[in-house]
Image 1 (cartoon, rainbow, N blue to C red):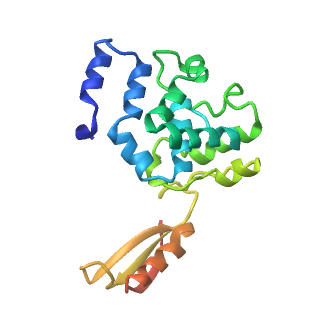
Image 2: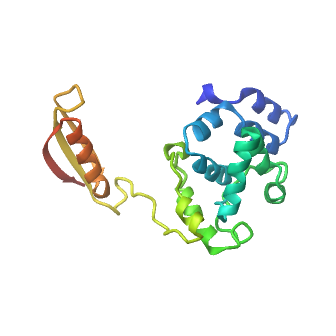
Length: 209
């Protein structure tokens, strides 16, 4: 949002007072980034997102993750961010004036097959919101050095790939006497449980087109 923009840093970038690399550093050290991806996320998730956002790939192994966790704890937040942006890998991949991008399907970024698989657990497409997932997505796969299953992104309504249903409810937390929820088949059980916990009474479930 406009209120969250780093106006001063943007101005410096436009005036070529700083490089793209330094702009990325300022952004990653900003209160906005820290609040969304550090303070609200588990430490392991924070490291995962740093790899994704700053190096464009998933972590390769437990040693790599552990080194960043230890650094963040021992040296602080800024040192953790600098370790990515000042790394030879960042310089080789992006240089001074390229915005970090996803490198999950490139062999130089993922010399191991497991690294290629893991990027799909972190990057769920253009509409993703990284901060919406606060728990680690790779902790087991990385710790055990195993490949995670590549799962397709959740289908959207109208995509033709998954059925959708309308759940009509009476009462519950909503102040209105009646309400309705539209959910996919995969999410129906969770939604029903939430409705029942809130005191709502389901009056009908109908498949939608």
